[in-house]
Length: 269
Ligand SMILES: Cc1cc2nc3c(=O)[nH]c(=O)nc-3n(C[C@H](O)[C@H](O)[C@H](O)COP(=O)(O)O)c2cc1C
Image 1: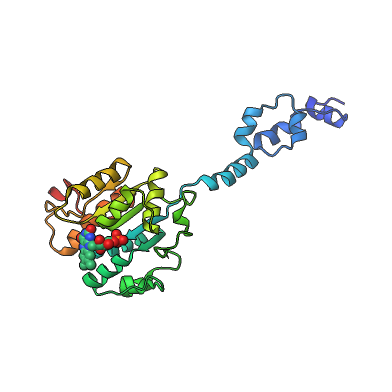
Image 2: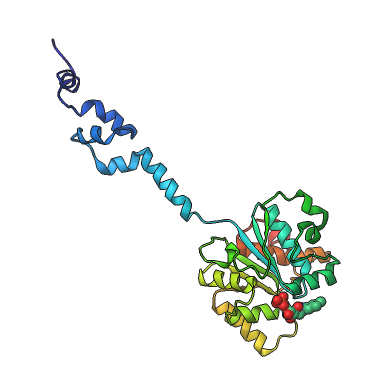
């Protein structure tokens, strides 16, 4: 009998042959034994096509995938509306936000927005009002400022960055000197040591030399100092426009998309 395919002939005669396995190898589904029996088997090409390898790589990569979670801390500087608005914008942009507030932040919030939050029995509705109802569970993860067991107190807990908005001079001083007296200071420390984005939104005027030096120290350590200084070249029509300008600039730093401000040279201005 004349057999055209020598591989098929070898197989039917009981000899091992490469031919039947070539297709399997090309598809990336040949077993180790089948690969060994194919003399042209190319380990490099196999690594490129093997689906099991892709699955293994994806499984390992999930441990190294960057988190998109953000940390937002509000402290006792004037400017609670900036912090509240930033929280709303980050959540609306689809981010999970780890929220921490200092006792002084709660005091300023009451003074500036007539809202009372209980730091030991936190309710998002107390901070955001009725708009909290539209925020799904797990989107804002609140941590008490004394809770050093929170994930954000550790560098091994991945985040995409942190903003302290507003940032008091006291908190800036604590960060500049690495005091870590509460979870806000500690999380800021973590972001600096892990070389992650830390945005400080200080508000004080005028500034004395120690405050200026503390802010400079934070900047030297890697923080972005973004003072609550709204611009006027955008011709703001309301206080909300001015708030949105600062919140938009914070979002720019955190890599969060937004439509909060008119950019220079957009719309003719
Ligand atoms: C109504 C009010 C407004 C304040 N405004 C500021 C401010 O603009 N900047 C600032 O650094 N501190 C301000 N403070 C003082 C801080 O709240 C105070 O220094 C506090 O200890 C800061 O603590 P914290 O950094 O833990 O939030 C203000 C306090 C109150 C009650």
